[in-house]
Length: 342
Image 1 (tube, one colour):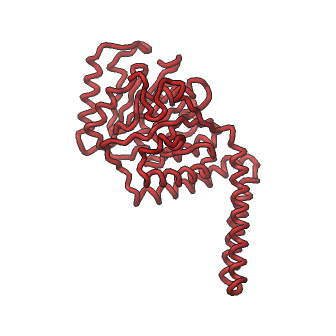
Image 2 (tube, one colour; image 1 turned 30 degrees about the horizontal axis):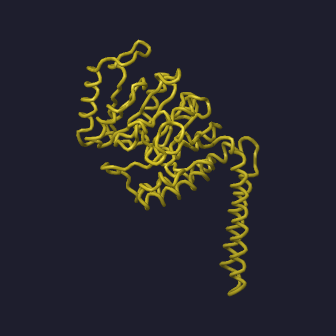
Image 3 (cartoon, rainbow, N blue to C red; image 1 turned 90 degrees about the vertical axis):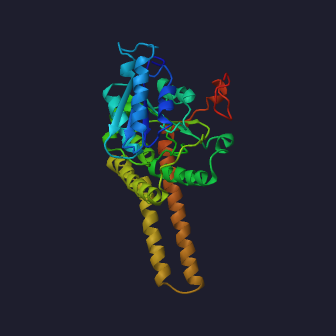
């Protein structure tokens, strides 16, 4: 328990032999349930998970929650086939929801996420300030330094694409998987149909926005070690781009059109129409200066309409997102993100 709330941790693991056992062992004592999902691994991940579960059963009971024991605390689940990190997290979310856990967090099976910082993502939900909390490695320059440049550039691009798609204009680093979500949010946003691959976090943000749920970012350092990324960018980029575009259209319909609110959708639609007209006029129009003037005028009109649409969307959703900066007052070093008492 933490501040009167039951806490669950979901640990997705795919070929994380040598990492996942240490992650399970590192989960703080205040966590009531640990859901470890082996997502169809082809190495010894499942055996390592089972060994960690058996070890947890032999440990002295450190706390008692609803009459449970250490044997009940760690729940190991194996997927017969690989479903993607989103699929693994979905399995954990659904099990935690069925167990009526108040706040559910995610710790990657690769050991990138420091469990000592778990309370930073839990606090805004426990305090009633958010339904979903995510870490943001882009909030502070000191935290971004250890992020490889190609990841940083890609992350910034995905940040802006996700802001447009989700309506959360105040968030950043949408790919950060260190998160916490409330039981109420899990019960509301149709988790069963959440995207199952690496874009699951972007998909979830769109769902949260449609249901008017508040999202809060907390600063977090980027931590990289010996783990191996399973992302294949040749499929990741087109698949996530298509998913974001599809979700963007769904959000505009569900949030605005179905509620009789047309200004945002109208501006986006006019931008597309004006852009097509300008393109057609440029292709079939005159030559030289005349064609250039048509093209420039069309671009200016499209850009103006897009900016108007985004500004209206940002205003409509301003109350649904924000950021907390708890590190300075939490006994955690602002640069490393580690406990200053260590």
